[in-house]
Image (tube, rainbow, N blue to C red):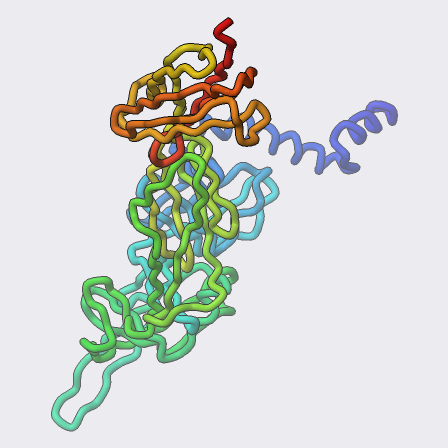
Length: 402
């Protein structure tokens, strides 16, 4: 092999030794054949799809696995989702130059506890029945009883590392307390040693399998608005909600408002509602793990087109009289209402050209008489209904008899 060919290989693979070149070539070949290997399973790790190879299994709940050589993030404490179960990687072998190996065990218990902040924590775990310890017996003045012991392995994180001695759990309708915590023996894992404890029916919730349930911080939300809330299309509104902690209202609570129907209503960070169109809207109110829904009915805005018309002559001769009839309308439909007539000049000032001699509010009629002082010109007859929404007017000219 000449030096130029070797340098080309070096540039291609980014490596400088023949042995490394061979290893890299083998890795790439394994990676190409990895998906077609026997006993592969499709899993999720950290919500990402992955493929693992089952190299062997000692028990149905313990699997030896291999991963693509390019995937070197297989570490103890990793939770693997396979079909309907979680598996916990409990061991990894020193990273082989060709592929990575490890062991994962089926999680058989959801560990639940109330943390120091009163928050319920839940995590899949591997529960061992006297498999990792042999503590012997406890002595009593009456008789010797075997001590109930359990071991639990969980992923190491901020929540599991906060578990201290005397923390209590409910397992299979029995209570256990932590007598030892081990955060160092297995990288990425927390190992808990448990001993049987007395069930306290006041503190413990056996149905939910949560010990010291009385320490759980209980949050609640209350919607003060009418629910469902009815508003018109052009009406403003605000979500009025309160959050409570153990029955006491939380001041300056961090409530999140979300519109489930953004094409109908929108809501801002303060709960102010903006109506976009009529329809059925929904807004969710969330805080401290609690959620409530406010239903909102937005009624279309009714358009009212009130008018009044006056029927009668456009001209009156001096010293003569004429009758006029008013009609009231809304959106083209005639309404029955009482009327009130009045006269003005064209500029709105009082007029001397004519007077109303009589009017009938029920029949919506009036009699107008022109002046007899030979004053000619135009005046305006006005009419409105009882509530003043329907108004109308008519210009009338006073003419000479000659």
